[in-house]
Length: 434
View 1 (cartoon, rainbow, N blue to C red):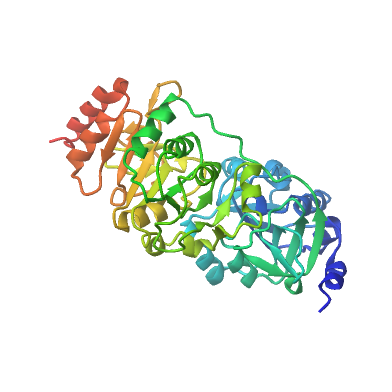
View 2 (view 1 turned 135 degrees about the horizontal axis):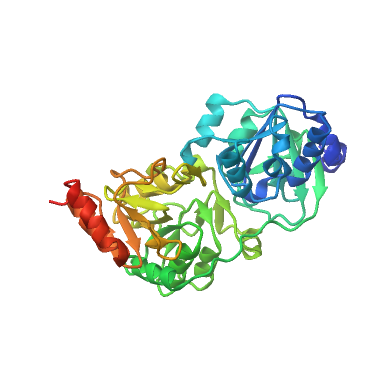
């Protein structure tokens, strides 16, 4: 087969691909930098002109300024249905013109295979290789499941996408249309590591031994943990999201993946997002394996690595140890993502530990994030039965296997001093502390 001729045959424009989209279509996209802003912009233009309506777009963690997520006049013409919200989809959900699908990240491929048929799957890829394959670059996630269930596949071929040699591929013979673009990938601004984050990072790093396998999230605290781990040896990576702090740990020699029980000598992830440094690291690198999320985030897989360490964030925690990480009261913020997957996987690992870490207060020390009860309407992300360690700048509480009274005492002890008396009063009034 002449792959180059087939490529030219399928090469077209964003306007032409958008013109193929019909009323009522379900469009599938994966996470972050794998999304297709050029095609979607052309589709938004059609929708504004009244040429198409009833289109639904499923995606996760939008990172481009997509018009249909910012312009509520497009609601009903193009509607977002997010598996996990980013900035635009979060605003759409809270504004009443976007929808959200509750889930555990690991379960999305199964939901897709059971519940959905896509009219088209759209994805941004690296240029075609000599064998006719495109790399899905920074993402594996649930793309394989969407490609199985899609009637068509449209590509944005971006020459600035990295080629992930150990990641999901798609062949030119599977493609129904493609366009060529050249633009920089979206980047995540570096988090500012303040004194609080640095303290929390140090408290967690003290409890991580050489040879551990780690999962880090995004933000100042995970970055601070990464910085504090640079003196460790023989660490491994098995994580949902590959971040800048992980590249730092690899390049300084703290991570070599030599002690892992599975995928030894490789860093395992399901998607990557951060700076250009990450994308450059992925390019042509067999040391990073981007695998489907139903494998990477399966607790039964995660726990196969001994001394598995998971580090995630929260918005608030109550005295039972219930963790809210996805809403502020009734205000939607994100989704469950992989937090529960890694809490459970780490706790099932031999020698594993799970940390939920956050600053003790918000809004200039006026709001305690450790609460007697969660804010009304708050979504419970990690249950009281799954939670392991809770960390603030004031210390570490180990809740797993502990009684309610013990949990309350430990959590009050790591709350901000301004709120400890109030929390103690509420706990005693409710008969929690005995």
